[in-house]
Amino acid sequence: MKVAIDIRRVRDFGVGTYTRNLVATLAHLDRETAYTLVGTGDDWSHLERLPENFSFLEAEPGHELRLAWELRREKAQLCHTPYLAAPWILPCPHVLTVHDTAEFLDLSGDGGTLADLIHFQRTRLALRRARRILSVSQSTGRDLQRLFGVPRDKIEVIYNALDPRLAHTPPPADQERTLSRYDVNSPYLLYAGNVKPHKNLPRLIEAFALVKDELRAHPRYADLKLLIIGDELSQHPQLRRTVIQSRTQQDVRFLGFVDATTLCVFYARAAAFVFPSLHEGFGLPPLEAMAHGTPVVSSNVSALPEVLGEAALYVNPENVFDISRGIRQLLLDDKLRQYLAEQGRAQVKKFSWEKSVARVLAVYGEAANRRRAA
View 1 (cartoon, one colour):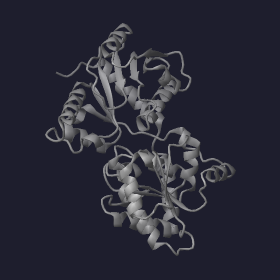
View 2 (view 1 turned 135 degrees about the horizontal axis):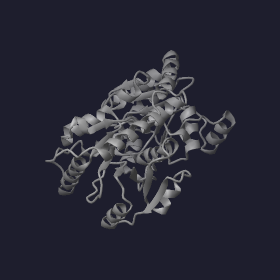
View 3 (view 1 turned 45 degrees about the vertical axis):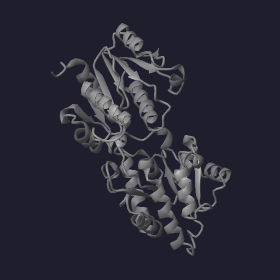
View 4 (view 1 turned 90 degrees about the horizontal axis):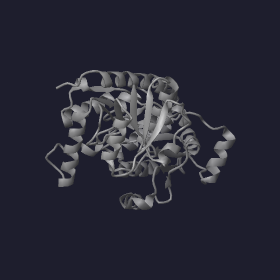
């Protein structure tokens, strides 16, 4: 079998993690299939060294027709786009991976701008044309059925797993050096992820301000901070306003993007990881925190309860007071902290790239060989 995989978003935050681990695990499990990775030279450089059954096809931006011709010449039997996109021209059956539907939750085909509606309809067409759709959770699969009318039997739910680079806790001496470099010397809450509106960071900051006020005389948490990893504050004026209005300028820090080793340190040393997202297709950051024994406060919506199970303390993400209640409870209840830390480490072990990619391979075989339904 010959399979083409689009790696043009391998440098992205979430899709990139998925793509890197998909390719690396395919290289480990499958030496028989011929894989063609579609991207640019820089995309290729972000992948590990691959065996001989992997080749690279340069994809020039805006030249989709030429790319389709090249794939036909390569005799590709299947194309896999590991993100939700709308390719118009493909010479073979197509598999899509859908990570979430957050951008479409306010669009049911009859709302938003003209550009929004065109994007919605193009996406629906892409889903209709796909031979199979890989959904990273049952929750996302239900969203696809509800929003786009995708038939249930077309969807294969295959969970993500932890990036191995984020699974190892650095030794204590390295942790101390990292925290010193960032001038972090007091207890902190941690958020890591992108800074999109559905991540609900304004409510997180407001909830943190309430917790700070309630614990201002606490012997352990009087100097509590909130660290946000994922973007710079200067790029998000609405968050700057929230920080100013909540009077937490001295206590909320935006650290931007950090490398994997540094992120592991911040996960390991956090008093708690807080993830009050309004919508998640899967939710890797809480699992990453759990891998380091850090207790998690999570919102109780979309895929998060499905993925995190009994290993998190859940809150209503639309209620600032409930978010602050959960944070305060987790900080002050040492037995709960220990219980969630133990449950978290066990929960992480339920997800494996080897098991997930083995199922992806099975879908490849089905999609490439079965007759397309009318």
